[in-house]
Length: 387
Ligand SMILES: [Zn+2]
Image (cartoon, rainbow, N blue to C red):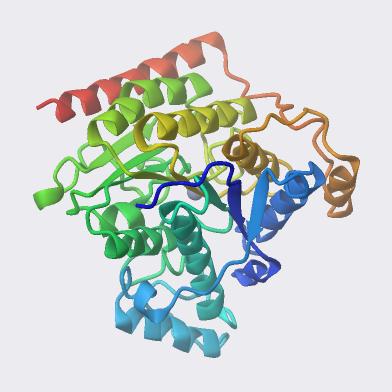
């Protein structure tokens, strides 16, 4: 781990070629969730004023992909990339969640490389914090695609960091609405990587895993923490989970770097999930993640994007707030007119403001009920960790 130079800005790893990760024009995982985020970051002036430094991605090498994936699976992805439409579905690639497309291997390797570059920037001390908005493809497994994810960029980047520095300790925090199953699986027996996932309870949402009883195995027993949130869980539920579980676990595990997956699909309006977070709730979580990194690992933080299916109106605002938290600046609420026009041109009514949010239509009784349910899950996790 190299000491960080003072004054180095936050790295934003992105270029337009990452838009090639497009499973199908009708697929819900839209590359525009990322490009509209970059547009909003740019429209707010965060690139021109040096708050963020734009860094180009590179494809992950075969050696890097092999740190998180089987050679035969990588060969399968390469074959699928060359035969769209003629593909015999296997290893999770085919009609449904993760359809094959021309150039799939190259596009997925570039996402994996982008997150790996973000990790390199932070580990080399070139920037204290880095953001890979196209990354966060947390469902891909060692030997198969799953849940819109071909290569697991997060697992690749974490494995590459450990390869470079075997003494490193890493905390992975995943707040996507879906369980971070692929990343958990990759490091389930690895004591150097603590994975924490806050997700909608697997009894109600894909991928079905992530119960509080999944705690790691072998030498890694205790190095996985799962907080299955009840459907409709509010900002208050997330705050309670962060303060009672995430922050204490981070202090206890003493990581050298924190890696976060910041899926914006836990927003109450997301069409694929049933949680109750607001834009303000996300902003609070981002501020606390930055503070926690300052407290436990000298600020080193590698942030990724993830899911998010209200891709035109919600995801870009959530991830722009993430970028501003990483850059240490507070943005005005008024959205730049040029960005609002771009959203309108795509056929969507642009949001009124950066943080404007009706929030979920919960009654007081419902708020109390989900908070109590979250408290019970937290109690179970806290009890199991102190055994
Ligand atoms: Zn998700």
